[in-house]
Image (cartoon, rainbow, N blue to C red; front, side, top):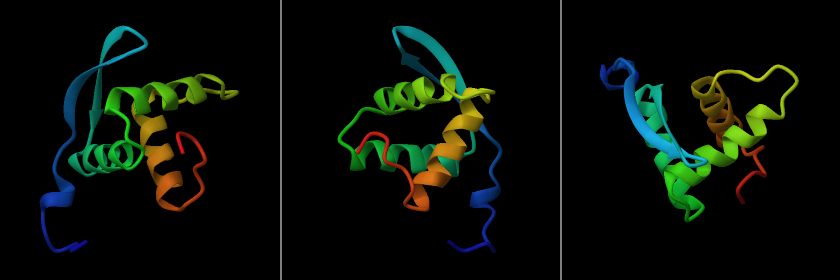
Amino acid sequence: MDLDTDDIFHPPLKRSITIAGHQTSITLEPLFWDMLRDAAEKRNLPINALVAQIDVHRLDAEEPPGLATAIRLWLTHDLLGKSAQAD
C-alpha cells in the first residue's frame, strides 16, 4: 500500500446491510469495506453473513464494542492470521 496516496485517507462511508433479519447501517473507511469484502469472498460468504458472525462474537464480549469497531478489530485480527471465525 502506498502511503503517499490520499485513497487510504478517504472519509468513512455509510452503507446499509441486513444482519439477523434487521436493517442496520455501518460506517467504515473504504479500506475496511474493501477488506471486509475480501474476507467474505475468501470464505464464500455474503458480507451480511460475515458481519452477522462478527456481531454474534462481539455481543459475547464482556464489554461489547460498537459494530463498526468490532469489524475493524476482527479484520485486523484476521489480517494478522489470528482469526479462526468463519473459516
